[in-house]
Length: 353
Image (cartoon, rainbow, N blue to C red; front, side, top):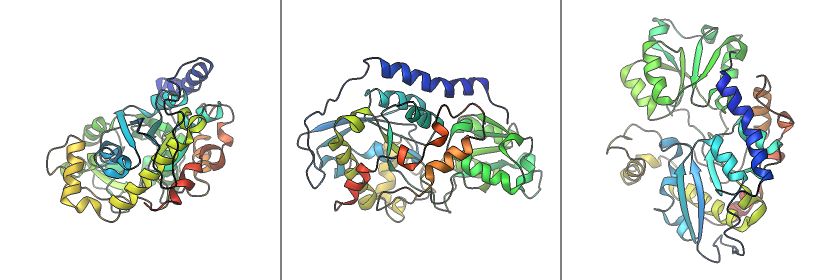
């Protein structure tokens, strides 16, 4: 596999950046010191939690509605959410400049934890249902009427918004294995979803990694054909990561956040929630979409009890260990116990939503 020099440098540099930041006095400190949480997950005084999301799309939508729904308000929480790439959010969370971020499991996160940063995975987001259109799409132009076989990927360019350092690498390596290939047999390039669509249509790339609503565009144009899931069945598509303020600072605030998060999942995001016109309208407004833009969107599977599958972290480290110069130091030896702080899920799972 050909590594983009810029991408390799960015991944490797993250650990160095975090190391420098940790040695400095940066960060805003624990603004919620002294706040306590009761047995129902309500904080003793109003608290603002700062967080980031990597995108303002369907795949990341709940935080953009947290303040509109009452699950967080009932727990004395106000959310300040902004859009920021996961790589940048990891460094900010480690130094206490934000409290929480939503994002995919990444090489940068594992390297940060291995370097001693106060960041840990605290809760999952959702799993993709089989009927969800998100996945790997092959260029119709390059297929030339043939039926797709994974062996066709040999020597081809595969695009992903996270390049080779995202969680989709696990599903990709399994797809390649079906064709007798490995990641060394393909060229993985980092590309935004917006750029992947025309590249797929004109044949500049052989395969794209797309989420809804990008999939609506490619299906409408006929420029690509879905050939596989982008996330392993049973694995969350992304996670909530807590930083220094909640891991080493006031854990009560993290417990309240996680209790509110689980309540949102249970009360609002079960079944075919997106079929509800009111929910769909709320999502479209929060995401800045035109009315009707999500009419073809599919609901995802949100958990009622927060948990991660056994071997989840190990599946990532085993995949990324195959790519030179990605995992740094002892990152390749990390396990679920090293990366996931279960205190918050345990607290939330013990409360009636």
